[in-house]
Length: 236
Image 1 (cartoon, rainbow, N blue to C red):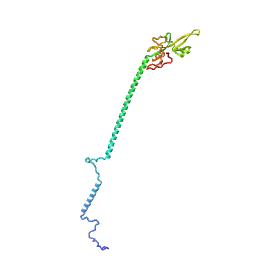
Image 2: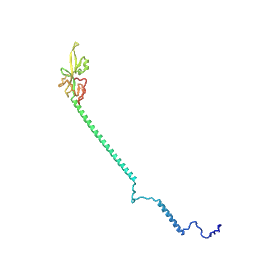
Image 3: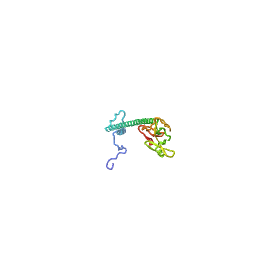
Image 4: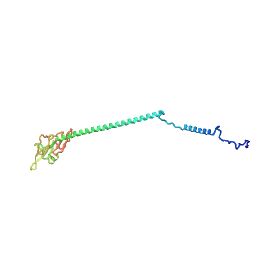
C-alpha cells in the first residue's frame, strides 16, 4: 500500500508505460510514425516548392507599365537612329559643298590666272618703247638724260609743256640757243630703238593705255584692263 492508500503494482506484473497506448502493435506504431514523417516531409516540400516554366508553359501577359516602358525604349532607339542618319547626311552635304566650292574656286582662280597671264604676255609682246628724241630730227638722242628734267636744269636748261630745252654753248662761253627734246614712242610691238635711229611710225603722243618701257628695259607704265601707272619722267 502507498501512503495514500493505493496498492503498489506487482513487481512481476507489466510495467507502466509513459507513452499512451495506440491500440496496436509495435509495427503499427512504427508504420504510423513513418507515415507521419513522410506526410511532414511532403508538407514541407509543398511549402518550399519552386515552379519553373518550360516550353509548354504559356508566357505571362506583360503589365501596362512594362508595355509603356518597351514602347518608350523602342521610340528612343528610333529617334537615335534618325538623328544619326540626319547627322551623316548633313556631313555628306557639307563635304560635297566644300568639294564643289573648292573646285569652283580653283577653276575660277585658274581661269583668272590664265587670263592675266595671257594678258601680261600680250602686253609684253605689244609693249611701247619710250625714248628721248630730238624734236627737229626725230632721232633717238645719244643721251637719254636729255629728257630728264633734273638733269636738264643742272645743265642750265629748262622744261616746258613736255619739252626739254638744253642750251647750246658757244666757244666763247655764250649761249647760242637751245636744242629741244621730248619723249617719243614706238609703235606697239616694235623693238627698243638705238641712239641715232629714226623710228618709223613713232609718235610724240603718249599712249593712254599701253605697257610702256624705256630704252633701259624698265617699265614706266603698266597698261591693260583700263589701268595705267604713268611715270613722272614721261612726256605728254
